[in-house]
Image (tube, rainbow, N blue to C red):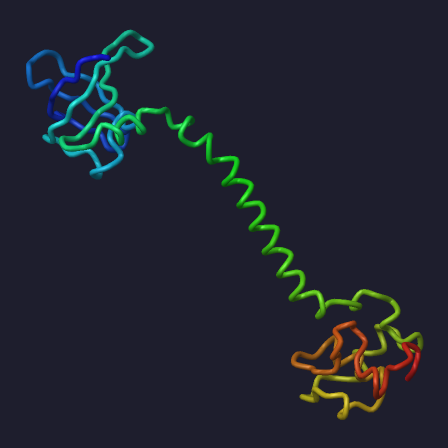
Length: 189
């Protein structure tokens, strides 16, 4: 195990996520990257005391690793030394699976809640054979009526259900209005 060195953070570039530590026992400043910085205790602060180990980067230059703030337990620092990918890898599959399951359940619940409103709206069986879509808008207009008892035919009830907000004429949500009064037979008028 490498000996720990005590030092102070001499400079920090927040935008780039790195800085330099000056060893208290003298010597050259040591590069430190945010990925080797302790997670607890907040953002790096110039002048704060740290302890660290020295390692070589890919270009064989010294860098601070396993950086700790005074009083930080060794067990916590050891768990933070693992690379980011190693920390994420273990829980990422479970987190992704849980997220997918959550989204699936959410979509299913929304589908269950909204489906009765749309059921049968695109089925040709809900349009009486004697009424074309072109005829309906010219014959009726939304005038505030909402209930089957206010309608005079299946054609009228069908128009109101499809074109007027707030109608209450499709109790079973199948897209056929006023089934017990006007539209018991899809071809009835």
